[in-house]
Amino acid sequence: MIGTVELYAQHPFSQAYESYLRGELTASEAIDIQIDALTHNHSHDGTEFAKCITPLFILMHQESGNIDEAVLRKMNSVASATNSSSNEYVSPSGKFRIHYETTGVDQVPLADANTNSIPDYIEEVANAADSSYRHEVITLGFTDPISDGDTYDIFVEDLSNFGAYGLANNTTSGQFPCNDLNSGTCIYIENDFAGYPPNTDPDGDALGAVRVTMAHEFKHAIQYAQSNWQGESDNWLEMDATLMEEVVYDNVNDYYNYIEGFSTDLFARATSSLIPGSYEDITWALYFHEKFGPTFWTEVWDFIEANNALTFLSAVEQALQDRNESYSGIVLESYMWHFASGPQFSGTNFGFDERMVYPGPNLSATYLEPLPALTNEFSLNRTSSRYYSIEPIESLDGFVALNFSASSQDIQFGLIGYEDSGNIITRKITDPTPDQLTSIDTDWQWSGLDRVGLVVTNTSISNQGSFRFQVFERIPSATEPEIEFINTRVAFNSTFRLYAPSAQNITIEVYDILGRHVQTVFNGPVDSGFRDFNFNTSSLASGIYLYRLISDSGTQAFTFPVIK
Image (cartoon, rainbow, N blue to C red; front, top):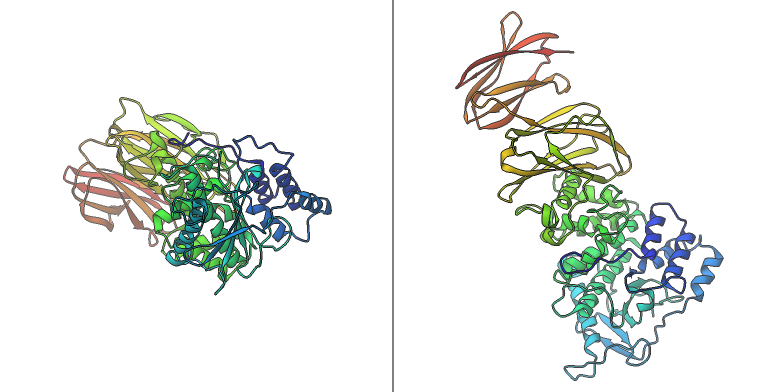
């Protein structure tokens, strides 16, 4: 359960589509499985829902010349919905024409509270279509898929035998045809939503399902207008359309049913690659919406519309560059948000707005601090994460520190500190030097923490990586500042790391082995905690040098090497 909403299993229909996108099935194989999953060869038992079956028609559209004749015959043998409904209703905006039946298998609920001869259900479908148009096109600025002067067709028919909420299609023949293609596509939606998964709409599950289905399918219509359902970006259409459910109808939350238990959900199966994104990855898209505002995805899709050859994640990276943000650092933070979710792992000040009702992270391991050295190496798929929890023993009173190494700069580390107050503090370690052991100190005291979450993310779009880490306790002097030399292996630079137990004035000076003054690295006030100082060694010969630390507590002197 998520909150009060039951989780539903992944339908074989969506499993087949995701397997096709991962290259595990051909288009014909995927379509064949999808047809069986939707018809007599798959028993719809009330716990599995295909949700949106638009992917079937996208595959038919994209692979029209590569589908086996036997599969085409099977598709044509499926009982076809019709578009010759007896009744029509134009939405209040005049943008949508709703086609429906009041008798027969496709009959809609006949309640008519305002006695205007239009079933309330149809008025709700029309209102949901108008609301989706206003929010997605007018407010967010997505491309308008409705041609000037045209009225977009929506067909209300019984889709329950397929376990489907709805679909968008782009043909005038075959299964679920459109009347015309002036606007490129048309939409089909379930006729009553009886027995479908629950949601949190205060007006009831059926009306909630109507609303989010319209938001979802209308976004598919926009996608078609922007990409013609072509290119790599189409691998992400379901994630994108599911996001619109939450954006347009925040109080419905039907998507709670689909964010856990799928093949790549970011809570339970973060170690699987995010690529390609589907229903369960809506929260990855929602992170960007909540972090950067409502027009972030409008900009991404504008990039794709301008260049259909652009990959989806490349468009995301361009939108981040426009905001002077690091792609890898943002991908890491998106997984940190997923870690900081659920009743056990949520804090008061970090992560998703609705994080408390999300699933918590599926941990790769839980460790008691201090940790032994981890000598084994862990692999990590492209664009995926591993989650760890480090919990201090009762007597631990030092500071959190981390040793790590990674095979690639694509491997990023995120620390999430859970303070006793419920507040969350974070630290990101990005762009490591490959295959170099790196030490990171923090000013986080174990005595004030319940636990530390560790998120290890491979931000690469294409390459698998590996890593190792050790989190440990570091206890500096209680009264004196302490300094250490860190060889960063950056050409002509070295780093001094200072720990100051209190705010004070300090001086760091460097001398050669003969006692000659070389440079004053720093002279001034510092706050308590850790701080790094860079020292340019380009003019120095290889050898042993001295640094002198002058503080309120006295003077300390130590040696360090310069190696070229």
